[in-house]
Amino acid sequence: MIRIKKYIKRTIVILLIIVALAAIAFKLYTMNYYRADTKTIKEIERAGDVVVKKYDKNTLAFYPKDVTPKAGIVFYPGGKVEYKAYSGFMYKLAERGYLCLLPRMPENLAFLRLDAASNLDLDETKVEKWYIGGHSLGGVAAGQYLSDEYSDGETKFSGLILCASYVTSDLTDSELSTLSIYGSNDGVLNMEKYRENKKNLPDLTEKVIKGGIHSYFGCYGKQSGDGKSKISNEEQLNEAADIVSEWIEKNRK
Image (cartoon, rainbow, N blue to C red; front, side, top):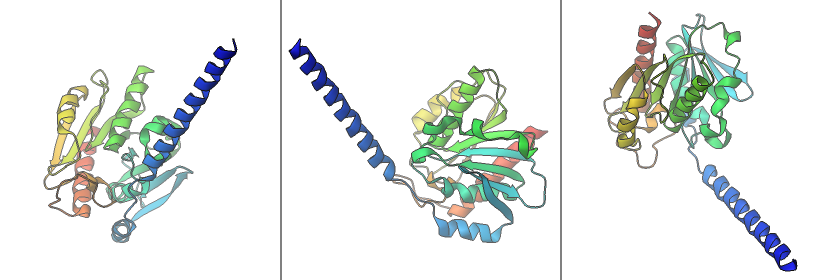
């Protein structure tokens, strides 16, 4: 009996040590993330005319100035990237007439807060049509969120916007429209998985930004392993924002 108690205690101690080491390893992993390039973002903001303010304590809102938003976009940031790094992209979209909401994710990982969109009071905005999207792992998380929404009945979103991303959940039974954008020189996106998972996307529109790379959907410098860009960060953001705007306008008609 004593031996059994000692064995149980020893096992519990070992398990606690494993859990503690795993927690430390995870924390060390998430501490190494990409910070927002504030210089590039400030240059974009100086050239535009958008109202930026807190939507709630965890979300930045980008409003088109002096016009009623044509639609709304909730955007999930990429994995291990500071959420403010996508301020430049949201700014470009807001300039084109869209209200954009950019939620901060725990440890910069959208999968730790898949339901971020559900926690936003979208009704108070008076915007009728909403889209959800994300960059890289943020897009994967947004797709998973939509899949969970549909399994519960329905969703408030009309479409999905994927930037250098793909969806692993089957959304083909939904009534969603889907836009997929990636750069021709992307060195991070797993193209084999991208092509394999295209079957999960309904009503797909696919656009490739010539000379674009993975990192330039945000403003955080160049991600490790990415390709060589042939266009500037701002040029890619402008083209991506134009593509999104044209696609939404087409879907609104």
